[in-house]
Image (tube, rainbow, N blue to C red; front, side, top):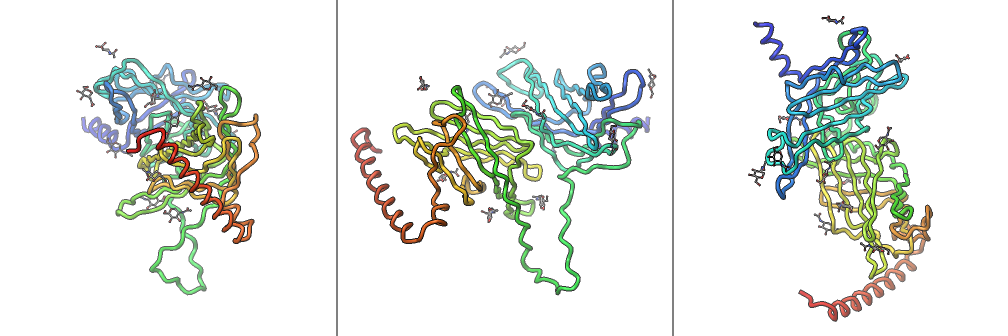
Length: 408
Ligand SMILES: *[C@@H]1O[C@H](CO)[C@@H](O)[C@H](O)[C@H]1NC(C)=O
Ligand SMILES: *[C@@H]1O[C@H](CO)[C@@H](O)[C@H](O)[C@H]1NC(C)=O
Ligand SMILES: *[C@@H]1O[C@H](CO)[C@@H](O)[C@H](O)[C@H]1NC(C)=O
Ligand SMILES: *[C@@H]1O[C@H](CO)[C@@H](O)[C@H](O)[C@H]1NC(C)=O
Ligand SMILES: *[C@@H]1O[C@H](CO)[C@@H](O)[C@H](O)[C@H]1NC(C)=O
Ligand SMILES: *[C@@H]1O[C@H](CO)[C@@H](O)[C@H](O)[C@H]1NC(C)=O
Ligand SMILES: *[C@@H]1O[C@H](CO)[C@@H](O)[C@H](O)[C@H]1NC(C)=O
Ligand SMILES: *[C@@H]1O[C@H](CO)[C@@H](O)[C@H](O)[C@H]1NC(C)=O
Ligand SMILES: *[C@@H]1O[C@H](CO)[C@@H](O)[C@H](O)[C@H]1NC(C)=O
Ligand SMILES: *[C@@H]1O[C@H](CO)[C@@H](O)[C@H](O)[C@H]1NC(C)=O
Ligand SMILES: *[C@@H]1O[C@H](CO)[C@@H](O)[C@H](O)[C@H]1NC(C)=O
Ligand SMILES: *[C@@H]1O[C@H](CO)[C@@H](O)[C@H](O)[C@H]1NC(C)=O
C-alpha cells in the first residue's frame, strides 16, 4: 500500500515514465521520463481556439508500435498514446558520437471534447518536425529541466523536466548526463587577478555576437524562382524579465538547421524560416501601379526562456525597389518591426517577383552603402534631388487620388 502510494507521488513529481524493450532479447533500449505541455490551434465555429494540455499521467507506451530498431537499419522508436486516440512518436537517430531525436510526430483527435471543446472539426490531424534540437552524447542521459520548445507546424510541444536516453546498454539511465543548452548557465568571464576590480555599478556590456552568416534563400513559384534573398539575419527581441526589467535577446539565424519554405502569388512573395522553436516570415508585396516591390510584413514567433514571443507588423514599407531591379545593402541595416522587435540585416540583396532565373537583376544600393562611398556634398545634392522628386511624386499622387477617389 505505502509502496504504491510512493510510486504515485514520484510519478506526479517527475513526469510520465516510458520504457521500450527489445522483443527478442528483452533488453531495455529507450527510457524516458517526460513532462510535455502542448498548445494546439483548432477552430470552434468561426473562432480560432488554442487548446492547452499536458501529457497526461495515464499516457502509455504502445509496445507493438515501439521498437528498438535493428542495428543501424531501422531506428529506435517510442510511441506514446494518451487520451482518446492521441499519440506522440519519438524516433531516434545517431552519429558516431551522439544520438538525437530525429523526428517527432504528433497525432491529435479533434473529436476529443476534453482537449478540444466545441471543435468544429472531427477527425485526426498529424503534425511533425525533424528539427527537435534534442541531442546527447553517446552513453549519456539527456536531461533538460528548463522548458525546451519544439514546434511541429502550428503545434508547440514544450518539454520540461525531461530525462531521456536511447541506445541504452543497461536497464537504467546512464550515470553521465548531457545537459541541454537551456540548462547551461553561461559561465562568467574570469576576473583578471592583477587588475583592480572594475567599478561594479554598471552591468558589463554583453559579448557582441559575431555577424550572422550571409545565406541565400530562394522561393520558387510556378515559373521558377519568385523571391531571392541573400542576407545575414540577426533578431533583436526586447522582453520583460521575471523582475520586470526590459532585456534584449539577440540571436543570429544560422545557416544550418533552418527549414526554408515560401509561396508566391501575383502580388505577395512570402519566405518562412523555421528552426527549433523559431518561426520567421517575411512577406514582400508588389504594387504594379507604382511598379515597385517592398517588404510589407514581418512576423516572428520564438521561445524566450520558455515563454512564447510572437509579434508581427503587416504595414511596413521597407526596401521599396523598382520592380525590375534588386535591392542591395551591404551595411548593417536595422529594420524596426515593432516596439519590441527589430531585425538587423547584413550583406543583403533581395529581389521579388521579376527574377531572371536564378540571377538578381541590377541592384539599387541602400543609402547606408552610398554614404560610405560618396562625398557628403554629392549625398546632399542627391538627397535634395530625391526630396524634390518625392515631393513632386507626392503632389502628383495626391492630385491623382483626388481625381480618383474622395479623400476621407
Ligand atoms: C522480460 O523481463 C521481464 C522482467 O524484466 C520479465 O518479467 C519478462 O518475463 C521477460 N520476458 C521475456 C520474454 O523474457
Ligand atoms: C557511439 O556509439 C557507436 C555505436 O554503438 C559506437 O560505434 C561508438 O564507438 C560510440 N562512441 C563513443 C564515443 O562512445
Ligand atoms: C465553442 O463555441 C461554442 C458555441 O459556438 C461555445 O458555447 C463554447 O464555449 C466554445 N468553446 C470554447 C472552448 O470556447
Ligand atoms: C463530430 O462527431 C460528432 C459525434 O459523432 C457529431 O455529433 C458531430 O456532428 C460531428 N461534427 C462534425 C463537424 O462533423
Ligand atoms: C526534414 O524535413 C524536411 C521536410 O519534411 C525535409 O525536406 C528535410 O530533408 C528533412 N531533413 C532531414 C535532415 O531529414
Ligand atoms: C505546463 O502546464 C502547467 C499546467 O498547465 C503549468 O503549471 C506549467 O507552468 C507549464 N509548464 C511549462 C514549462 O510551460
Ligand atoms: C495550422 O493553422 C492554420 C490556421 O490557423 C490551419 O489552416 C492549418 O490547417 C493548421 N495546420 C495544421 C497542420 O493543423
Ligand atoms: C537591440 O535592441 C535594443 C533596444 O532597442 C538596443 O538597445 C540594442 O542596441 C539592440 N542590439 C543590437 C545588437 O542590435
Ligand atoms: C533568461 O535566461 C538568461 C540566461 O539564459 C538569464 O540571464 C535571464 O535572466 C533569463 N530571463 C528570465 C526572464 O528568466
Ligand atoms: C496572375 O498573373 C497571371 C499572369 O499575368 C494571370 O493570368 C492571372 O490571372 C493572375 N492571377 C490573379 C489572381 O490575379
Ligand atoms: C504572408 O503571406 C502568406 C502567404 O500569402 C500568408 O499566409 C501569411 O499570413 C502572411 N504573413 C503575414 C505576417 O502577413
Ligand atoms: C508597423 O510599422 C509601421 C511603420 O514602421 C509603424 O508605424 C507601426 O507602428 C508598426 N506597427 C506595430 C504594431 O508595431
